[in-house]
Length: 223
Image (tube, rainbow, N blue to C red; front, side, top):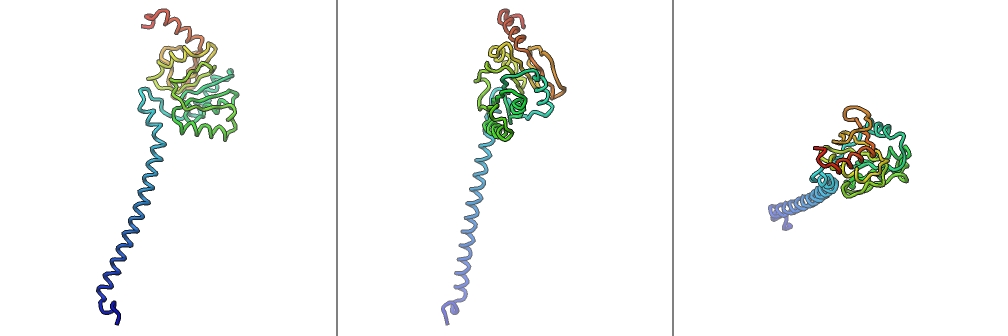
């Protein structure tokens, strides 16, 4: 008779021990895989979210809210008699820039979030306007807009007064500025288009540059 036959309880105990070891090993491998997948997902999530969070932590936040179809149409309608260069400040997913390029503008977009810039470049390539568009990862306060004759801005109220001064000092007198969602606080619009959240305000640079010169000449006149 074999030893296993003489000591059946011992053999069973040994088999049970081996089964437990295999199960523990299997559970351990699953744990490593799950941990790896979870870790990778968190890294990917952080990579996508970090630029948005970085923007949100700035003193003046310019959030990404996609332009509606009506807003795009109002912007282009307001500039239908215009040509030349156009810049979208805070270009998001690039829809204004791409639409402007299709209407004959040499259009550029400045956007702080790199994921949106890369997506915009891909979208422009796919829609065949990559030669007449450009997208830049940049803070709007660190860029000069002096070379542009048409400016589009989807701003927020907290930044519009500072942006007034920047654009008035940089843009040529022949430029037009189109503000979407929120108007500039002291500029007088040449005309408006649309209604509600789709309203756009169109400003003539000759007018607001003259206003700035007047303010600088008489600093107490605006109080």
